[in-house]
Figure 1 (cartoon, rainbow, N blue to C red):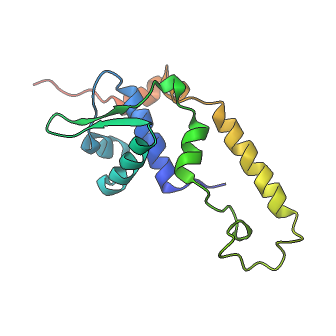
Figure 2: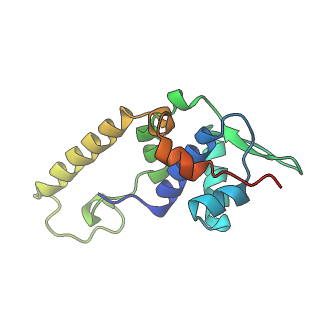
Length: 148
């Protein structure tokens, strides 16, 4: 299974916010540290704020922070919300399905079961578990700045 670029960005964004729980973070700093286009990032920020994963504040001193505690954000839920109902294979797309095997194909059921197991395994993981006590990750997400 392959996740979309949007989901990848969403998880990086949430990890960055979780690594900075004491302040609002900005789109530009996330884009720089996480190597994400600001345009793509803006779309994901909007979606995650609508879903309640982020709280945003506009203005000169604006930014964003997690909309709920990191230990209450399940990665499986994030994937489901951001990925939506994207078809794994052509036969899952009702409108665009041209496969003549759909009615008799057992692979479709196997793929559906595999996707459910995939999401269920991600439901066991919280955002907090990805970030908390992960010193190598925190070193990347919290670079030391020179105070001159």
